[in-house]
Image 1 (spheres, helix red, strand yellow):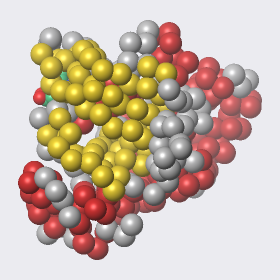
Image 2: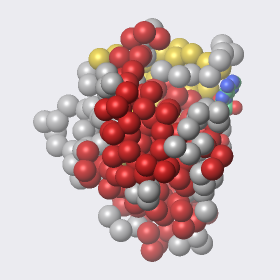
Image 3: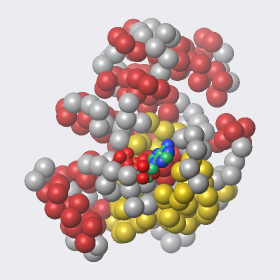
Image 4: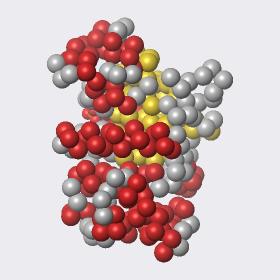
Length: 271
Ligand SMILES: Nc1ncnc2c1ncn2[C@@H]1O[C@H](COP(=O)(O)OP(=O)(O)OP(=O)(O)O)[C@@H](O)[C@H]1O
């Protein structure tokens, strides 16, 4: 565990309410994430995981709003930030990867050009420096022949490669917090493992905090220090991963864990 009582949280979600179409669907979610810590957000479909993440990222879907509570990033409440204020926070403080990497890239531009653009706008690099940095970043994501990948279009890359490109874009601003919403769900099992290893390595190298959404408890067991279990937009249980998964206190968590046992969760709880 990286938490210490003296350390103030990097992210503090405090009694968060989120409304869709004027009706609350997230009802007072609270949790803290310490610098360098990884938290897994789990729960059945519709439990509010994605809307909680999107509120934390300042990108709620149309018709969805934060209706109460606070979201503090490094002590500052960002829950009512304007778009302009978010532009200063997203990148250097918080970044995200999602399930379907292809939908976050422009199909008519090479992936490198899109990464270069982020480096130029967010990091103020000139064209040449951006390209050099982009190729370095692609290499550090474990992509072979990074110069070649740089000049490829999204349709030329596999799902795993696209997710590595999206992770490169996400970490290009050197964020403190990475929000990863089902980042490996759409990938083949072997590719899933490689991308999880990459996220784990980035955490260690960059002291990146992680908020991971996954329906797969084995993935959460592999990557996360603590787990927050959501049901119907409320936290039913939270605590150290090993304690929650080995000895769940809430009947709903017990059922979630029981449902996953057959998929080999025992083998993967290594922390
Ligand atoms: N854009 C939206 N407009 C209206 N209601 C929404 C919207 N997005 C989600 N909801 C509703 O809010 C609740 C929480 O949804 P959310 O997507 O956060 O759940 P989730 O736990 O991420 O589910 P999943 O695992 O299926 O992605 C659900 O009842 C859902 O139907």
